[in-house]
Length: 236
Ligand code: ATP
Image (cartoon, rainbow, N blue to C red; front, side):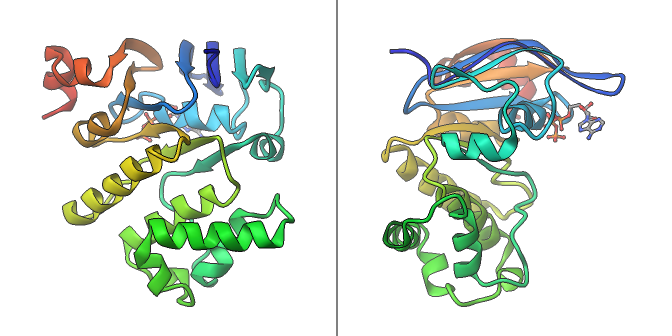
């Protein structure tokens, strides 16, 4: 099976700061892969490089067999990559329905869009009850759900998820992770960045550990959950 996504020798700089130093990552179709790492390790930068929000200094990004290293952000969405960024940036003054509609902006199949909205409401029942509510009046957890549902509205093959648990209460975090586990069964490939390494590894197939822009460890999620170095540094 050829990988859905390959980062080859990928480096990213912000001015003088080298945020990613020649990293290699492979993600197979249908896998859930987590990036584990401390603040500033380069996790968000990896997602931003893939969704082409930040420029690449050197190396390659290969997606579904195509070199997308020089593609624009709008082009990679059309190729099937969706990014739910850190901080759940939903449009506060628009309703839940309007936000979902926005996630489908690259599509013009009205019936398909409608059907996918209903699919999101099945996956996120809290959003179904609040479909006409302004997004800014949702709780933090509900806004995170909306950010994920909105990303799914472009029908991605690859979903990039940045810190879905950030700032949320444990019960809502568990709810979101159980939805992610459900999402995994639909076959979508997920690259997850998450501070809560314990929960993230539990729903992942594999993981990479990033330290100061370098990958220092990788392997099966179950093996990493039992790895002393990971336990000590990231599992509290
Ligand atoms: P966090 O969980 O804190 O977001 P992270 O692992 O996602 O951490 P990144 O946000 O990818 O880390 O940041 C990697 C490095 O790049 C850090 O040193 C950070 O300060 C730097 N950096 C990130 N964004 C920018 C930017 N827009 N301009 C300059 N430096 C940046």
